[in-house]
Length: 273
Image (cartoon, rainbow, N blue to C red):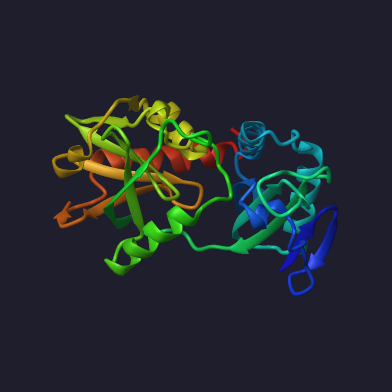
């Protein structure tokens, strides 16, 4: 594996960032995960636009899109993969210990790892912790992911691949690294961005391509929804066959199966929609 670190390509064993990088010491950084297909990134323009929104939300300088595209090409050319996860990490750079940011340039790391196509369906759990829809970093894709690590570990301990959060006002919000959709009376619904969920790239495409409605939903909807599915960069559209103790036999159901098919077809037609 070859990794781009601050303008240079390194072998994974030799890639280094400073122990004083603010992304490491206090989580002062943002990132994007981009799917690559035969070495070509999917929806890279949308990902770079969201990276910029997240950076601005933290008060970081705008990332250089041309540099990131060049880094992405260099990394994917150096590590040919049929299906990959391209990780773009952009940090506050070398800074003093503590929350104050230094005067050094931001840090940029671009790495690529291999992934397998996800199963058509998966199990999820709900967790008692909440997303804060009024947080200063609500809706930003930051590197501060410890909350997700804890929730995902609980999910794995219960034989699930994802954990779903509500927000502080009791509305269904999102997963640790996914957006959630439910089917009610044959129509697709997903929590609005005001719930505090991340504006997922796959979520946005799924809404555009399936006509899903943004709707405030209570977590109890998971107990009676006809179908449930997740979206994310590495999942695309993935059905849910179990949520907590509730089984959803036959997943993916007809609405989800159509959404999966539409997404695959539209994504196959345009790698940068």
